[in-house]
Image (cartoon, rainbow, N blue to C red; front, side, top):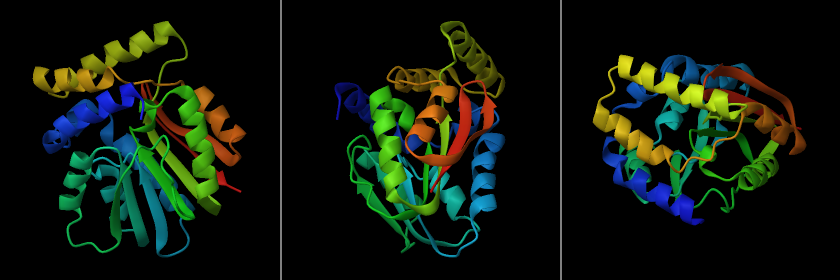
Length: 230
C-alpha cells in the first residue's frame, strides 16, 4: 500500500465510529446519487441470489442499500480499514450472507466470479495507473453479463472546473447543516484524494473491456458510472 493510501486509511479508521452520521450533510443530492446506483442495479438484475463484491466498502453503507429488498446470495465487503469494517460488522450482525476482507483494493485478489461489483466513494483514493489496473481486475472478476457500478467522487475536466466543484460543495454542505468540525474532518480525508475526470474513467472502462459504459448521474464532483462485462 502506498504511503498516501496508508495515511488515508488511518484517517478513515480514526473517523470510523462517526463516519455515517454526517453522510447526508456531506453528500449533496444524497438520494439521487445513491438512488441512481440502485436503479442501475434494479434495471440489470434478473436472477436471484446474486453474488456481490463491494470494493472499499467502509462501514457498509452502500452495501446495506443494495441488500435491502434485493435477492442477494453472497456479499463480500473489502476495505483497507479494519475499523471501518468493524462498523459494517455491527450493521450486518447475524447476516450469514455477508463476509469481510481487510485488504488493499489496489492489489487484493478480488476473488469471484461475481455477478455484481459495486464501489462508493473509494476508488478515487488510488492513482490513475492503479485505477486503470483495478478496472481491468474488476472486469476479469465479473461473470459474463455482470455489472460494475461505481458511485464516485470525480475531478473536474480542468483546474477551473475542479475549483468550482470545491467551492460549490462547501456552499452546499453548509446549507445542508454540516458543522465546521464535520467539514474539517472531511477535508482532512479528502487531502489524500486522487480524483480523475469522469470522461477519462469511462474511457478506461471501455479499454478494460466493459460494454454499455455510461455515466448515469453527475452533480459536480459526485458521479455514478457503470459498465457490463461481456
